[in-house]
Amino acid sequence: MSVSPTRRTAIFGLALVLLSVPLLAFWGAYESLSAGFAAQAANEADKAFEETRYSVAWEESAERKYFLDPRPEVLREHSEAGEALDASLKKALALEPGSSVMLLSLLEKHKKYRSFAKTMFKAVDHHDIVRANKIDEDLADPLFDEIEQQVFAAAAQHRDDATMQIDRLVAVQRIVLVSTPVVLAIGVGLRATCDDA
Image 1 (cartoon, rainbow, N blue to C red):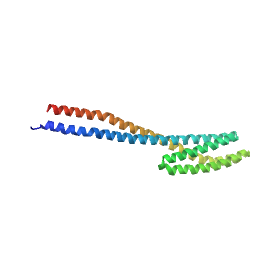
Image 2 (cartoon, rainbow, N blue to C red):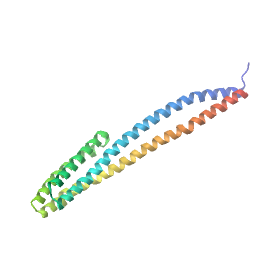
Image 3 (cartoon, rainbow, N blue to C red):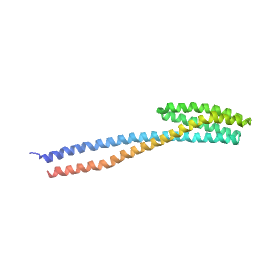
Image 4 (tube, rainbow, N blue to C red):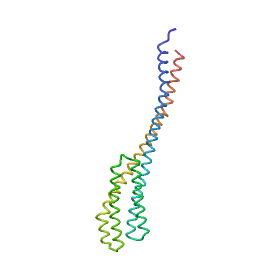
């Protein structure tokens, strides 16, 4: 019995469809898992950098507050904010080893800032506001401004990275969602062609 060229082409196409369905499923699962892990990692890094951003604002607020209200509670709040900033920078370092140079630099700058702040607060305690302002303007503030700018930029970048990874996951899911019924429809059409030929 001779097989017509149309039927032979349809059988060959159907075989390709049958092979492509599990390959498509495997590719979709692999890419979804990969994109999901990347989105999860980016989200964790984003959270760490958001904590860092929050801690920077908290520490700066406590510094200003101490100039106006130099009580031990405010000094303790400033110290807690500084510890929170160090902790969140270290957490970000653990999650983002690729950013280690920047993060280690920020930790070092923050250490210097805390040293300047200690001297500045002692001047406030001794009612030497001129000296406290000079330390703040010449040493503490410029250093803290650098820290703040880098932290805010890194937080924005990681927020964008997290969004990009989620977009990637959505794109993979969309491809799988659209291509699976298309491949199946092609298979059904080829099967019908086999029956007709």
